Image 1: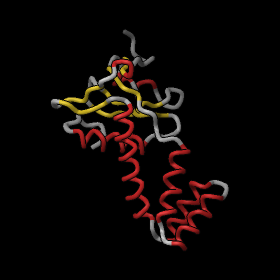
Image 2 (image 1 turned 90 degrees about the vertical axis):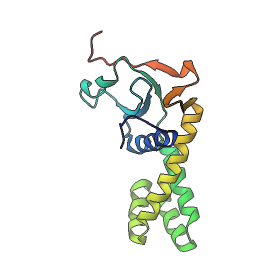
Image 3 (image 1 turned 180 degrees about the vertical axis):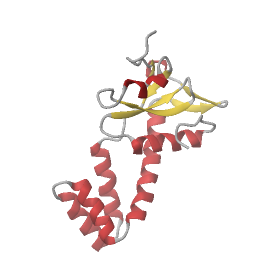
Image 4 (image 1 turned 120 degrees about the horizontal axis):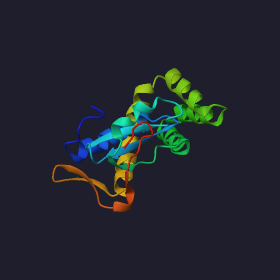
Length: 162
Protein backbone atom coordinates (compact mmCIF):
# COMPACT_ATOMS: atom_id res chain seq x y z
CA UNK A 1 0.00 0.00 0.00
CA UNK A 2 1.26 3.45 -0.94
CA UNK A 3 2.99 5.27 1.93
CA UNK A 4 3.98 2.15 3.88
CA UNK A 5 7.55 1.51 4.93
CA UNK A 6 9.43 0.00 2.00
CA UNK A 7 10.80 -3.52 2.47
CA UNK A 8 12.16 -4.45 -0.98
CA UNK A 9 13.49 -3.03 -4.26
CA UNK A 10 10.32 -4.18 -6.05
CA UNK A 11 8.07 -2.44 -3.53
CA UNK A 12 10.15 0.73 -3.87
CA UNK A 13 9.63 0.77 -7.65
CA UNK A 14 5.93 -0.11 -7.31
CA UNK A 15 5.26 2.60 -4.74
CA UNK A 16 7.11 5.19 -6.80
CA UNK A 17 5.04 4.11 -9.81
CA UNK A 18 1.84 4.65 -7.79
CA UNK A 19 3.05 8.06 -6.62
CA UNK A 20 3.95 9.09 -10.17
CA UNK A 21 0.49 8.04 -11.32
CA UNK A 22 -1.23 9.92 -8.47
CA UNK A 23 0.66 13.19 -8.90
CA UNK A 24 -1.38 16.09 -10.11
CA UNK A 25 -0.17 19.29 -11.70
CA UNK A 26 0.93 20.85 -8.41
CA UNK A 27 2.64 17.91 -6.75
CA UNK A 28 5.66 15.68 -7.07
CA UNK A 29 6.88 12.44 -5.49
CA UNK A 30 9.76 12.17 -3.04
CA UNK A 31 11.71 9.25 -1.71
CA UNK A 32 11.73 9.76 2.06
CA UNK A 33 15.07 8.33 3.19
CA UNK A 34 14.33 9.14 6.83
CA UNK A 35 10.89 7.50 6.92
CA UNK A 36 11.80 4.83 4.36
CA UNK A 37 8.66 5.58 2.32
CA UNK A 38 7.54 7.18 -0.91
CA UNK A 39 5.45 10.32 -0.44
CA UNK A 40 3.87 13.05 -2.51
CA UNK A 41 4.61 16.72 -1.82
CA UNK A 42 1.75 19.08 -2.63
CA UNK A 43 2.10 22.76 -3.48
CA UNK A 44 1.17 24.62 -0.30
CA UNK A 45 -0.79 27.16 -2.35
CA UNK A 46 -3.37 24.41 -2.95
CA UNK A 47 -3.40 22.47 0.32
CA UNK A 48 -3.07 23.25 3.99
CA UNK A 49 0.52 23.49 5.22
CA UNK A 50 0.02 20.53 7.56
CA UNK A 51 -0.28 18.15 4.58
CA UNK A 52 3.47 18.18 3.94
CA UNK A 53 4.42 18.67 7.60
CA UNK A 54 5.07 14.96 8.16
CA UNK A 55 8.19 15.30 5.98
CA UNK A 56 9.65 18.27 7.88
CA UNK A 57 13.30 17.64 8.67
CA UNK A 58 13.40 14.38 6.69
CA UNK A 59 16.10 13.65 4.15
CA UNK A 60 14.34 13.24 0.80
CA UNK A 61 15.15 12.79 -2.87
CA UNK A 62 12.86 14.79 -5.16
CA UNK A 63 11.60 12.80 -8.14
CA UNK A 64 10.45 14.43 -11.35
CA UNK A 65 6.76 13.70 -11.98
CA UNK A 66 5.55 12.36 -15.30
CA UNK A 67 4.90 15.47 -17.35
CA UNK A 68 2.21 15.88 -19.99
CA UNK A 69 4.65 15.21 -22.83
CA UNK A 70 5.62 11.84 -21.32
CA UNK A 71 1.96 11.04 -20.69
CA UNK A 72 1.11 11.89 -24.29
CA UNK A 73 3.99 9.71 -25.56
CA UNK A 74 2.66 6.77 -23.52
CA UNK A 75 -0.78 7.24 -25.09
CA UNK A 76 0.74 7.46 -28.59
CA UNK A 77 2.74 4.28 -28.05
CA UNK A 78 -0.35 2.46 -26.80
CA UNK A 79 -2.29 3.61 -29.87
CA UNK A 80 0.49 2.35 -32.14
CA UNK A 81 0.44 -1.03 -30.40
CA UNK A 82 -3.24 -1.60 -31.21
CA UNK A 83 -4.80 -3.22 -34.32
CA UNK A 84 -5.25 -0.85 -37.28
CA UNK A 85 -8.85 0.25 -36.65
CA UNK A 86 -8.26 0.94 -32.98
CA UNK A 87 -4.91 2.62 -33.70
CA UNK A 88 -6.53 5.02 -36.17
CA UNK A 89 -9.35 5.86 -33.76
CA UNK A 90 -6.96 6.50 -30.87
CA UNK A 91 -4.56 8.52 -33.05
CA UNK A 92 -7.46 10.66 -34.22
CA UNK A 93 -8.51 11.27 -30.60
CA UNK A 94 -4.95 12.34 -29.79
CA UNK A 95 -4.93 14.78 -32.71
CA UNK A 96 -8.00 16.64 -31.47
CA UNK A 97 -8.39 19.46 -28.99
CA UNK A 98 -8.28 18.08 -25.40
CA UNK A 99 -6.43 14.91 -26.43
CA UNK A 100 -6.30 13.35 -22.96
CA UNK A 101 -10.07 13.57 -22.56
CA UNK A 102 -10.70 12.45 -26.14
CA UNK A 103 -8.33 9.50 -25.70
CA UNK A 104 -10.19 8.32 -22.57
CA UNK A 105 -13.51 8.64 -24.40
CA UNK A 106 -12.18 6.64 -27.37
CA UNK A 107 -10.86 3.93 -25.03
CA UNK A 108 -14.31 3.59 -23.47
CA UNK A 109 -16.07 3.58 -26.86
CA UNK A 110 -13.76 0.86 -28.18
CA UNK A 111 -13.99 -1.09 -24.91
CA UNK A 112 -10.27 -1.33 -24.16
CA UNK A 113 -9.98 0.78 -21.03
CA UNK A 114 -8.68 -2.15 -18.94
CA UNK A 115 -6.00 -2.90 -21.53
CA UNK A 116 -4.97 0.77 -21.47
CA UNK A 117 -4.61 0.80 -17.70
CA UNK A 118 -2.52 -2.38 -17.77
CA UNK A 119 -0.28 -0.89 -20.47
CA UNK A 120 0.00 2.42 -18.63
CA UNK A 121 0.92 0.62 -15.37
CA UNK A 122 3.77 -1.23 -17.11
CA UNK A 123 5.03 1.98 -18.69
CA UNK A 124 4.79 3.82 -15.37
CA UNK A 125 6.74 1.07 -13.61
CA UNK A 126 9.47 1.38 -16.24
CA UNK A 127 9.59 5.15 -15.72
CA UNK A 128 9.75 4.66 -11.94
CA UNK A 129 12.73 2.33 -12.33
CA UNK A 130 14.43 4.85 -14.63
CA UNK A 131 13.82 7.66 -12.12
CA UNK A 132 15.30 5.56 -9.30
CA UNK A 133 18.40 4.81 -11.35
CA UNK A 134 18.76 8.42 -12.51
CA UNK A 135 18.60 9.62 -8.91
CA UNK A 136 20.96 6.87 -7.63
CA UNK A 137 18.25 5.49 -5.34
CA UNK A 138 18.30 1.80 -4.51
CA UNK A 139 17.26 -0.67 -1.83
CA UNK A 140 20.34 -2.10 -0.10
CA UNK A 141 20.67 -4.12 3.11
CA UNK A 142 17.03 -3.59 4.01
CA UNK A 143 17.02 0.19 3.48
CA UNK A 144 16.34 2.78 0.80
CA UNK A 145 19.61 4.54 0.05
CA UNK A 146 20.80 7.25 -2.31
CA UNK A 147 24.30 6.91 -3.71
CA UNK A 148 24.55 10.58 -4.69
CA UNK A 149 24.59 12.98 -1.72
CA UNK A 150 23.91 15.90 -4.10
CA UNK A 151 20.44 14.48 -4.83
CA UNK A 152 19.46 14.45 -1.11
CA UNK A 153 17.89 17.47 0.54
CA UNK A 154 16.39 18.12 3.95
CA UNK A 155 12.70 18.91 3.50
CA UNK A 156 11.50 22.07 5.21
CA UNK A 157 7.80 22.73 5.67
CA UNK A 158 6.75 26.33 6.29
CA UNK A 159 4.15 25.20 8.83
CA UNK A 160 6.73 23.80 11.26
CA UNK A 161 8.98 25.93 13.43
CA UNK A 162 12.43 24.57 14.15
